[in-house]
Length: 91
Image 1: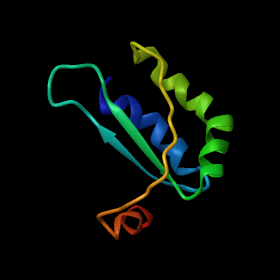
Image 2: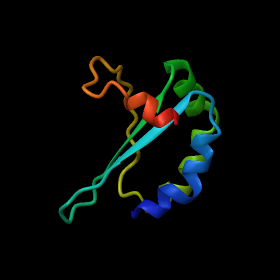
Image 3: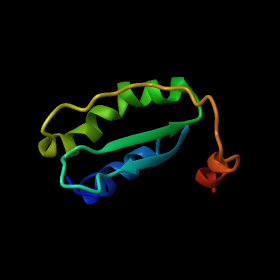
């Protein structure tokens, strides 16, 4: 899957979600089919609301390009080595 399959239809959906800060897309440098996406949210409840309400619609755009189902895991940011990280996404 190339970035356009995510960027074109899904990014506008994410940007409309309350609490959404940004998306980090990690693509492999080698010829593998695995990529990682990290979405950043102001609060866990906003991410959970997105998963219940808007995620099913967004998933329709990317599911045809997936070899395996999307795995969702939630993490808390414990430490940031870039103090302006969240400010950069908010700008």
